[in-house]
Image 1: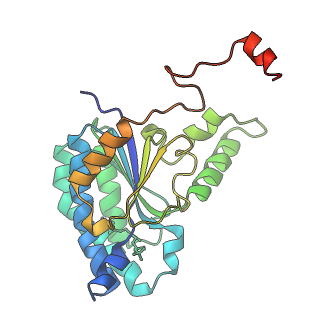
Image 2: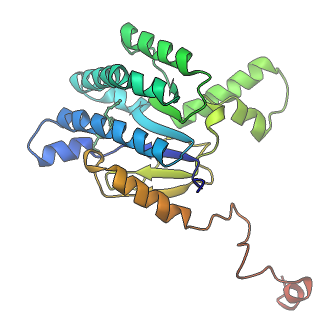
Length: 246
Ligand code: FPP
């Protein structure tokens, strides 16, 4: 059966608390968490999701201790080397969006190579957000539009076309692990009509099994996009509206 949820976005939260609860340094949570990233990419692909966007490092994360930022950089590098073959053999289309200028040159080179080699790949659109913020993505999109079309009025479609990865489309489901209930400047434009799912599970404990259960639960939710349900309570007739004085 076709997967109803086409684009899933994930805020992978709770690594630090997971480690602290185990009397380990916070970065241990990131190490364990990076293994979970591989499991969830595979699960999304197996379950027929078309796009998966993961928040690996926000613009706010630059304020973390230097060592923690360094560990996150190294984990990203190791992930790319470890998963490169699987990304290629599963025809995954891989992109990193955000400000990657502060990443080490060798990591940027691995990213550029993988992006170029998977540019036309027809499979899962996998996006890592690194040095990413939703507001700056929208501002950059507006600036790009105005540079190309000076003085022209912009439509919603024009702006959407200038986002970092327009082909991933709108988000159907945003999952946040770790128990907080915030969107934290993630994909602000793309989540306008997304279903939100907050799980208390901290990212290192998140599994493909829980991911699948969330997808099934959310696929049963009714999405109305601001309209009315196809069945159930119908709109009032003109006469009914008049008798209600509205
Ligand atoms: C939030 O945990 C998570 C992050 C800041 C980054 C997510 C990174 C990974 C899952 C590992 C890196 C892997 C790859 C492949 C890039 P937190 O430290 O904010 O948790 P806390 O809220 O418990 O402090």
